[in-house]
Image (cartoon, rainbow, N blue to C red; front, side):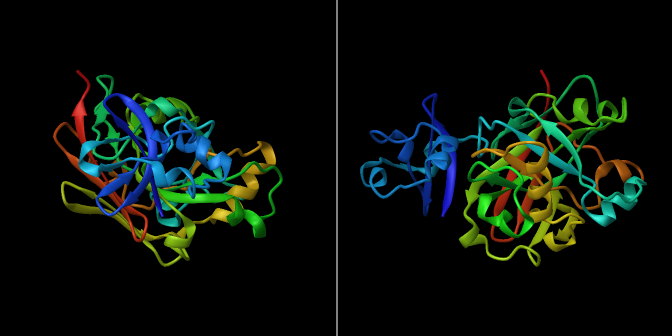
Length: 279
């Protein structure tokens, strides 16, 4: 099943996809208000979905899959080819940083290159959404805490990322990360390792790998994160990008006004965003 968060006439809601329609569960009587709330409730749609209005997908504005996550935890340098191109040493634990919710946009929304920099880089990634509260989660139970997966473009303002050893400023300019188009449940995605992840800029392939090339796999990441914090329903974990980033090309390849960037992951979806300059 594929879940979406959307806005209709300025009202934010959520639902699931049925062909080219959205079953707008969140607009039904007594339904959870947000997708995050629905995940926390166990996503029992059996009653409310029968009464939910059906909307054409073309009628709604897709929002980030989880517009209001409590936490967005991102993993850096989690593919060997990206670690090598970045010149970073091997480490024994995941490299983590945080994003803020207002740095995100949804599918088909523009990513905004800020006035403060021209070094706007793409990073195609797999994101997961946490299904239930957990602390000290054993790695062999980690997949029980996954509500589903989505595409993510963890786009970076590279010069601001390099101001210090901490990544935070370059990852949190407003409207610089994309999350969507939908949350796909694990039963629809299936095993992850052989799934291809690709990033295209203006139709040209700039990143390509498989999810099995992650240095730290999803069970390891979930177990590690749940040791220092309590994971909660609707939390987002973004699992890292393969090699091929624009910063490490000669000459560097930066996203600019008018570009179109796509992140595609087998069985998960295709996330597309244009790029505009801040006005």
